[in-house]
Length: 262
Image (cartoon, rainbow, N blue to C red):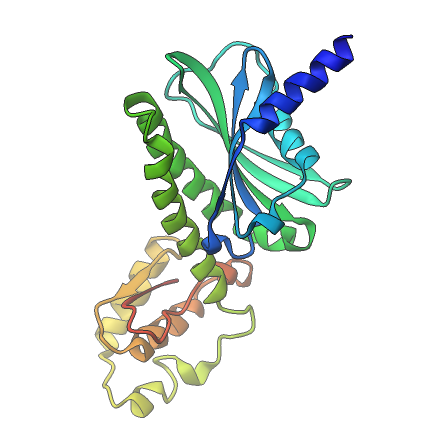
């Protein structure tokens, strides 16, 4: 009888799950919002996928909700945010989950926002783990405020924020520099300035490199209308970035964008 009741709770929880399509996911299988239900336990509230056919199976979603929300029975502080990483090798997925507290029907509850990735993309997920964790934390801060202040429209507003954030992560992946892409000719030290018809101020390049080193390899290059010039400076700064970190360096696309990261 208890097993039947448990199955009923699971079915009820699944029935309350809202699935939305978000093409901007790219290499991410889905994004899942879960919460702790005092009756059903951990359950899935919302799922964002590239297409309805790409929705992860119910057992995968239930496992992510259970692993991200299980643990301490007591609620953490209202401002507490925690990130967890899980690999479910038997299910073929991994997830990065950020746990937080927010209101649910007037009472404080524990929530988790999880980014699910299929097994073949785990190396890419690990390479961008710092970026993904930071994005999830920022998203959680926004979502928590929306759930506490305007719960009736929180998820509609949050979906727009989520799409924009995931688009930035996907563009970073798509425009990333390969480990062996530090072609000297494309830098300010090579023939790139001549090919682009510009002159490189040696003093400016020295200040640029000094600043890049002082910020531990974190630089945003912006301010020029020609993407090729921005990318030349990015290629120059990449020479001073350890190879293990070059996957987080990205060229600006040639579609009139005006900033790139190194």
